[in-house]
Length: 385
Image (cartoon, rainbow, N blue to C red; front, side, top):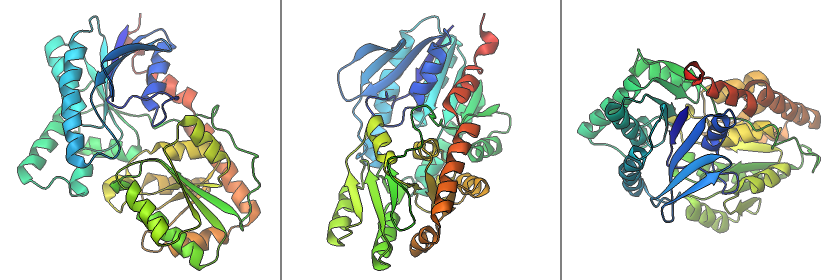
């Protein structure tokens, strides 16, 4: 069997960033399935062997600091070059297309129509719903066209893999006949483990945000929480690590407002994330107040669970419900940044430790990487000989 994974943003543990597609490719390769990845990078075209995975890197520039329209240009370039590259790979049994962007679904749909090879389509962020709710796409005709494209991609897929139950519910609503599976992001419970590096105490809490510094992440709210913490003279320290379109803005706010309780770190690779989490007590999941952003499945959430960290979220939806049911985190209303200080300082040392232990238990129970890799590989098993 040969499976071709179509993903513009394939990353390895060494490069850093979201490595879900690496985990998925490894799950197939480890089970004897010939696995090919078509991706892009900021360099010349090349083909590498990555731990038994044949990776085709295409020369398509992309950076987290790109604005929306510059990103669209990058997406369309990958669509054009990726389709051409996929045509050169023969004896394919399945394509597995990973969004974002939505346009990768166009690639998979075209390949299916030309070759007869079926495809799975993975949805981690809802497009075009996300850019529409964030105000990037306002043209009525373009909205209608994108919604039609989205439904077409869902309908023609062998199945759609949703990264959260909320995403699955949306897909079932807009495309009722589509077969869906929920395979969330993975908690690597072997790589991230609870740390004994520091002793947690309510008077010395470290809250970490490690991820994209984009508009959708709404990190002005995190800095508002830091400001309120200083006003309250609460000994809470914030670590922000990553890169993106809002990094310069955030750095200016930290300096101008003298937010001495915020450490702004550069982009961290996987080992850097592990080391930073080792010294933290809590992981902050932060988004703008848009309904579509409540449906996502952010990597930082699962890394935080695996590392046994208290989880802080500022959005409603499935994550808030889960951490409250599992007693492993707190919800902070975006309208009241002071609430973060109030809630964290009200926790006893024993309560903090119990919530961290509950987070680790949730990771192992529901999101263990090895179990989810087996579930993913099972999508292709009916055709294995």
